[in-house]
Image (cartoon, rainbow, N blue to C red):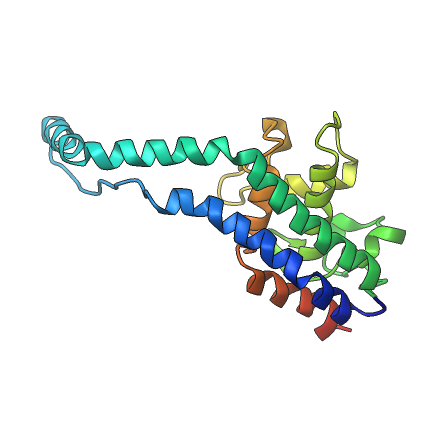
Length: 213
């Protein structure tokens, strides 16, 4: 395959199957959304009474939601495998067909990046990180989940993704490598970039490799 159009075309059915599987696991959660209590109370006694009543009325729904969460967690390895495979395919597409050779001038924290990483410095910014680099770090974490530590670049990308500008010093555990959520990161990464369907993935890949060519 000598161009990105052919690569995306010839991998389309495989990637569609991956997203179909991802959606199957996500439907486990969507089938039993947790009930929500939203109200204000003038006293602690009123709050307790309302909460007790809510639990009494919503008990079956709460139990169903908890069971759905357990079923979903039981499939976390399968879900991560599918999401990691999507990241792997996207990684190869960028590696093979990105023509970028320049470091974005507004991303000073990336100074020093050269060579094989430059093709990944493309795409819309998410938490200040180009989409291509998020794919790069997400794929590397997935492929080296057994490693004690990722390279400094991969670590710095995850640090950016888990930072919270509104709450300095706090980290989003979904992307905090220190939380040791090895099998959660691929799913969290694809959720962060909005890849929960083939169409959303394809739109981004076309923008990365075709529209900007």
